[in-house]
Image (cartoon, rainbow, N blue to C red; front, side, top):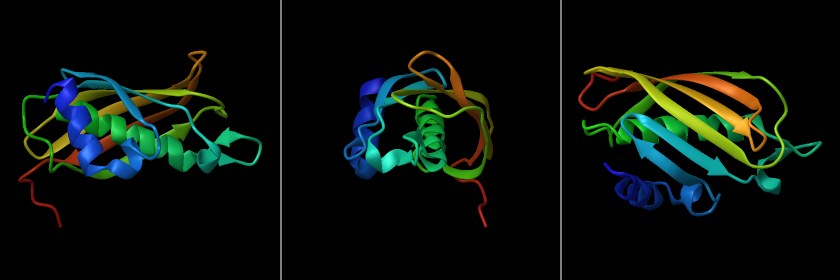
Length: 137
């Protein structure tokens, strides 16, 4: 899918994330993706720190967008593992990058990094997706 198709697909299939939470797919091409989000009160912990679940959602969403940008049809891909390391407290806008490291017939591995608007790393994650047609139990 190209960037426009990815945006349309995600807005249609995942409206709670892309319409109601203001997540924007800024780029998606060749197994990479960049998302941006300006968190609001729903995404914050005490002290106005961006919550861990918000950072995990962005990592998972960016990984999926990166997969969708590949030639193979990944619309039915599902997350089978997500391992995240939180590096520092985040405040303000978040930029989430994702890069597909390997997309096989059954599994895909994606690396992600969340940064604040000053470019400081907030979290890194490794995700594994089960690909369409793979046996999932």
